[in-house]
Length: 76
Image (tube, rainbow, N blue to C red; front, side):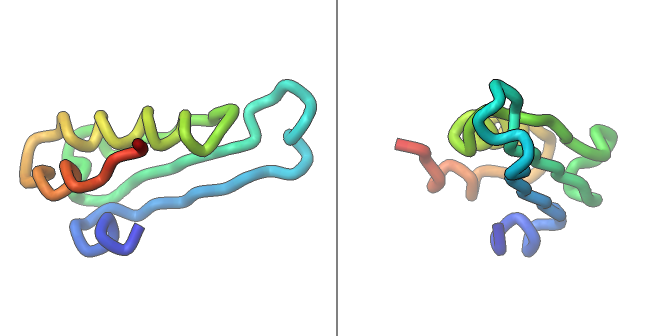
């Protein structure tokens, strides 16, 4: 998350205890900032933290600009 901040991305990661265990998506990720360009923000809810990261990392890598540094980050 620190690296995202250094590259112009604000990240909010939240788990909502009220949505845990009820079949809802308790994890929320919000990415915003100038590094996202025209996209402006990424915001979605997920069942797991892994799902959130699997959703966000490829979208960042596909953005125009210098995102090669993300290649060093893997979920596996």
